[in-house]
Length: 106
Image (cartoon, rainbow, N blue to C red; front, side, top):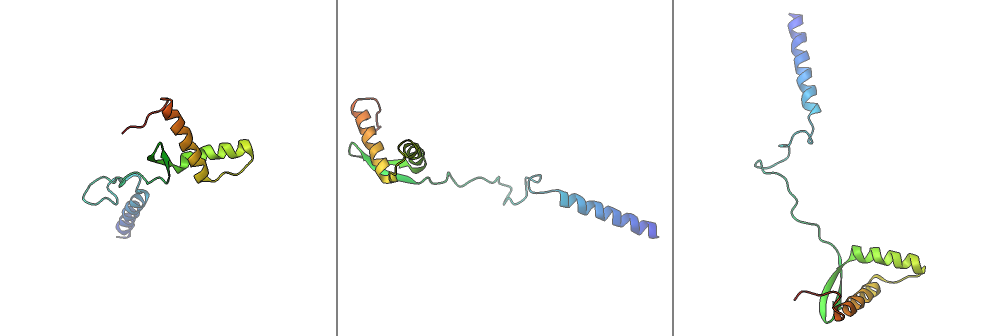
């Protein structure tokens, strides 16, 4: 009689260990509602700096401006504000557009 009880507890212990070992990465159904796959709601919104290029409003990605600005700061060992740098980029884009090197879609 004792051996049956011991065997049952071993099986219960094994089942508990198996369920404990199964984590969310191994169980694709975990946490899903209605069996639908999880998906992001959309791309994260990037912060932008608004400028005007040849009278057209343009939203320049802040992360791209920061990359360029960091190179400028290292080269000149000076400080330039983000908005000032964005205005300089807009002026450069305007000159390039006038020479036909870049074009802006209507």
